[in-house]
Figure (tube, rainbow, N blue to C red):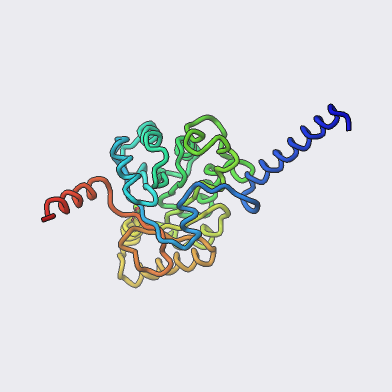
Length: 273
Ligand code: 3PY
Ligand code: MG
């Protein structure tokens, strides 16, 4: 084979191979995947995970939380005045932390999810989801095409997660749907069946508030059981707040925040002999 022919042949083969690799990497299912979201890996190994709420807009405090031993941080943007600008600085300052950055966004809209993913969140937590339609919106904005409708844009995601982020993001970003209302419980089977959902998370405080019942009441417990059964049937992971530890099949827990952990740390220090 002449040298020029060989070189064009090699170049064509290389383009074909890299196209195939790209196509494989953006497939929502099947094929080899690069997983850097350690929450995903640990959950697939059957481990129980812990995270804590973050609502203080300070990179140093964030780094302390993100390297304290938690598996993930639950960056609270539903119930705190944190801005995406605050959180972008926190995530950048603490890139490489042992805890994966998860953000509870206020709603499953393009504008919220776009900003949360662009600044580098690897987990998106959607509160008070009532319907499969809302769940499909959550997945749609969380995932790049062809699976979803996330726009490419620019962001610090590549600096955090690598230059191949476009090919790896869909496999690493987790979608967590919170069931917090009786309507959500009613529709949980359809919600859990939406492709792209990784986990169902029960929010007991809101579930109690919206339903007028509380943990221990038969009506409340029946709702928890319905959510549990639908989640298991769909093959998804199940999470809630730390007081739910010990309930069967719950493997993802959030509890504590900066203020409570400072208090607990100070108490332990002062009581130490
Ligand atoms: C709830 O219990 O309502 C929650 O949102 C838990 O974070
Ligand atoms: Mg809630």
